[in-house]
Image (cartoon, rainbow, N blue to C red; front, side):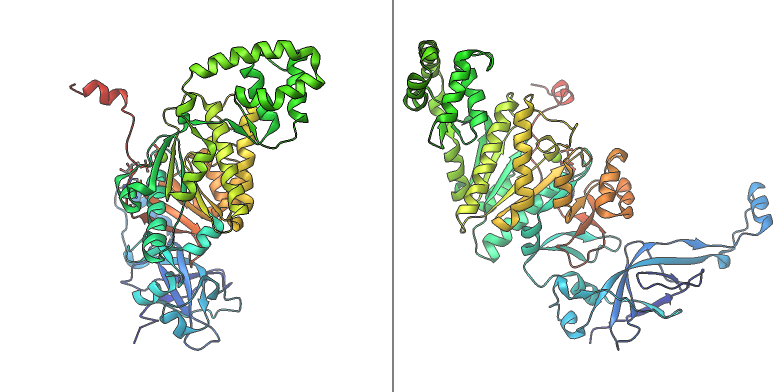
Length: 516
Ligand SMILES: Nc1ncnc2c1ncn2[C@@H]1O[C@H](COP(=O)(O)OP(=O)(O)OP(=O)(O)O)[C@@H](O)[C@H]1O
Ligand SMILES: [Mg+2]
């Protein structure tokens, strides 16, 4: 028989005389130890034998001060009389499950947890439930992945329900070196592992990796060499365009116009707008075959100037390495075939190009998922504040139009992606610099490592005031608030790393001390 009310540890007691169900204060019995994060319970005031769970959020000690005590301390003779210390604890309601048997069998889902809203009885007993009861409270009955162990007793595992996670997405935040990438790659590993090996499905993950850290051996071994592909972003050519404005701006520069002000440049722009097809290719051959005839018939004055420029472009083009590059459609094909497509930005110097390519790939993935109900994809973006910045934030692309377009595409996926088969996993170092649309949408499942004070406000908006605790968390620890967890209240968790980011670049220090 599982012991629900295993050990009595105190009584509900309110100094002010007011008792509310959502937050209780209780006395702690002599000899008992209570820590922030502990899960405790009381008896439901009207339902027989049903526990209502609470989580301890504060552990104040009350001691009535006497006048002379400060004087004694000043004289170096403090009066240490422990019998006058009254340890208390404040705990926030987690909720209860109506069907006790279902709870004990570990079969409750997230929706089975309800909140107590009736009066609680002053001086009711407070208990520590048994470990089995807490375990069945925490584990979702749908397929779930393990994240880490819950503070303070490290006995219980924090789980995220996989169907929920895929419906809502994930946001990982944290300052420099706090463990964001480790958390992301570990969760990608667990999701892929679960889907491949337990549910026997086939996941697809597109990783956008600014620093080239996601090619970990464990991850590659998990999916197998022939299900993982690593692509440097500069090896992708963007010859296909869906957006006419963007196409025109690239075409103009290929034809050697400084801007759109001259008459022939305007003629090129008009001809592109008048073109009847919807796929545009940035090659001299396509231009000559599809666009030039329009110029010839409708913008005759500019024709000879443009032909001359086209010929120069042709010469440059044939000498280039264009033929070795991957087309966007190849990348999409890989994403549909492979389990992991790892796009690496670590070696690029042309962020305008990189952003345009990312925008096109994300758009193609989203479009594909809309059109093909059999295709779904997780898009994992590390350092996402760089690609979807809040106004005034940082972008690595110098062209504002390009940045804006990429951000809009990420917004589109964040807001409408999950129900159409595309789920975002986002990590960012600067939650206050990433667009609010992202944090609002993705904040339903947030893993917050330690952040700097400047970013605290944004994290508090998502997690509530309790988020101030994240400023003291050590590396690898995080506060998690997730709708994909059975417990909606934030808990502190030590992330159980399954694999680590590969370290790439060497610092000046590494180079100074290297012997070779
Ligand atoms: N959960 C964890 N368990 C054990 N060690 C960890 C954990 N998380 C991070 N670390 C250690 O901290 C190092 C830095 O972690 P990581 O690269 O994930 O941090 P980050 O926040 O992504 O850093 P950056 O700001 O540089 O991107 C890791 O290489 C690893 O050694
Ligand atoms: Mg990182």
